Length: 69
Image (tube, rainbow, N blue to C red; front, top):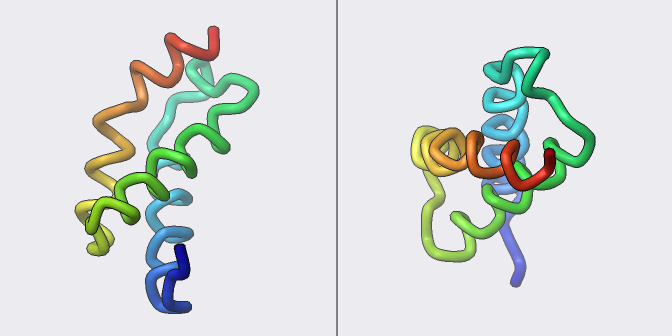
């Protein structure tokens, strides 16, 4: 799937926002990649707004951390 440069920029911003909101004690190896994958999946399913991407990824943080630990 191809994304516009604007959407890629929005996805990167969403990733950085979500990562900045994660407490240090929850930051585990592979977390950023898993969050990025979550954002990519949301975009692939039509979510293209910054707020929507942040929300989609933020909703999955606990599940991702549990999966990686």
